Image 1: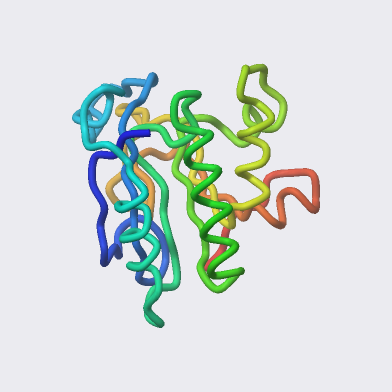
Image 2 (image 1 turned 45 degrees about the horizontal axis):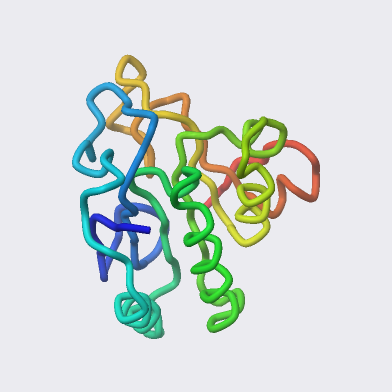
Length: 173
């Protein structure tokens, strides 16, 4: 996996104060994407065990309540295995004390029911996540008044409740 950047004090990509990892690479190429520099899977920086340790250590502060994975596309076939491994490490080290937010161009339904070589891995990511911001960014639905998302088609989903109820439950906080 490659990554574009890490925000060590992130207040924009989820509730509370968090740490955010912008993975490198995306196939969606949304019109007027604010992160076009993350589209190329070969750009960015190499994710190493040293960077992983630094990333996990950034979370090990009492005021950090969340970690966010975005990009690029964290659930792209090229990224999903490393993202899932990292999420397991976060859960192992911090339990449920840190909320995990995932931003993806895939919808919740596509992750649950779609066809892909990595469908099983995407479903497993849902088991580790707390909040999913789903759906591609659509420039014609851009709305600057929306919290934590760019266009009105995107949803902020409470993953745990959605999986328990078998339907999308929006995150309320």
